[in-house]
Amino acid sequence: MKVRPYDRSTLWRSAFAERADDPDKRDREALAEAYRQLRERAGVLVGEIHAVLPHLTVHDLTHADSLWDVASELCGPSFSLNPLEGFVLGASFLLHDAGMALAA
Image (cartoon, rainbow, N blue to C red; front, top):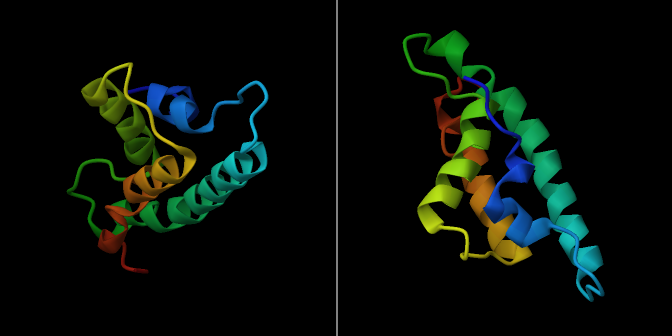
């Protein structure tokens, strides 16, 4: 299954997309970058799940990335997040399965 990039989901865009005359631009960009760094680090951890628990379904970054679209679908197009809410939601997507990795 091909997973659409998380940053194309409506929830990600509501939290992190560029805005005209945005007084919070620097903070918005800092949180988006912090998310990308967390995603990179979490990817290493969740990438080990299949080696330890091969009988499980996919629990790598594609799983976490797909949750952005699932949540966007559930919330609907008019639901929006501020950048901090977007970061916390995304972090929960990234880390919810991480405890299954032996390295955890």
